[in-house]
Length: 164
Image (cartoon, rainbow, N blue to C red):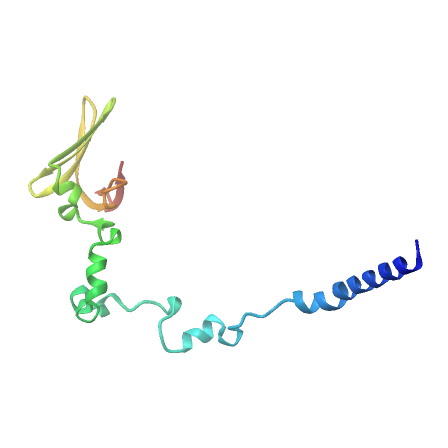
C-alpha cells in the first residue's frame, strides 16, 4: 500500500473511531422525558386538586343525574344520548330490539328459545317437547344494531343469568 493511501486510511479510521467512541454516547444516551418535572407518584397526584382516575367516585346519592348535568354540559349530553354506549344496557321495556319485535324465536333441536311480550314484560321461554320454563328478562345488553343483543334474567336466588 502506498504511503498517501495508508495515511488516508488511518485518518478515516481515526475519524470513525472518534465518531463511535466520543460523539455516539453523547447522542444516544438515555434521555429523560421533557415532562419529568410534572411526573409524580399516584399518592402525590391524589393530594393535588382536579380529577384523577384513582381518586375514587362520589357516593351514589351524590350523583345529581343527567338532567342536572345537561344544564351545563348540553352539547355533551346530546351526543351521549345518541352514542352506542347510551344503549349498551337497557331494561327490556326500553330495548329498541324488543320494542320492534313482539316475538323472537330460535329452534335448536331439541330445544326452542323464545322471547315474547306478555303483560307488559318481556318473557324468556326455553323448552323441549315435554317442558317449558319461563322467566321475565331483567336486562337487555348491547345496542342490537350491528352485533345483536344479549338478555339477562333472574333465576333462583336472584342471580342474573345470560340468555343465549
